[in-house]
Image (cartoon, rainbow, N blue to C red):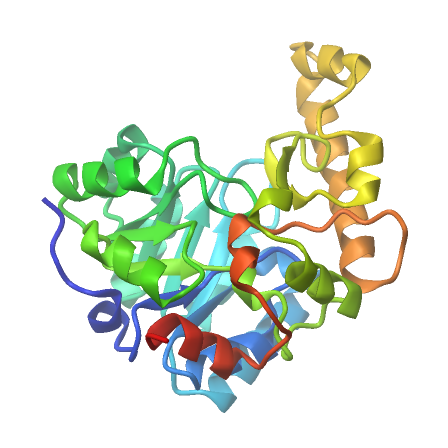
Length: 317
């Protein structure tokens, strides 16, 4: 049974919420606003093209908030930058690291002696037990309501299972967009929530006004799973352009993806092409709109400052 200790106690914050690391979206302004609103924010190291830019962002956040700072590292072998990103994170003394898409062994090994907590994204019990054995401080249960790369299991099934079988805390990721939903995952046994999509339409976000407004205008029914973006299923808003190009790889892409010799390179090319499309959509007006978001945009009714979004998550109506 997981230790029943709230995320607010673990990270010394007012509310048990991590503003989830969102590829292309998260930035230092958002982390500062999160820290000053009683929660904590994490940023993907991959949002910065150079180590210098990554260092500058962490230092900027540290100088402008007393709240804990988190970094998300993609730890699979397709990320050649991870050794330097980890080195920089440890050197600058971030408070916690969220690992995704691979083994956290090296991250845990380097962070433990420095007192940096390591939270690991998991989608099932098998991987949760594996990272627990490696020494993770908590698991982040990525359920089927999550934005981006969602898991296959509902939060109602995944959270209680992990809480029962794991001895480390369980943080829920997916499906929390208001106060009632936060209380629901806490009642299921989670120690807190990693929340992303509702923060896209924030004043502090640097994405385009069109992307922010799309999060206001569209709802849960408009979220679809696409394999066209990164080669693996990813949630996007079902814009007219997404409807036009479809959400599944075409027959030629599928054949290439199954070829043993070619699939690694095809996946890398698909990912690179997809990320370029996401970046262009996120920061400029284009008819080729591929906007990543989760079903919790259902609760986004206006573009607001992060402090107001946090109020909506932590105070009953």
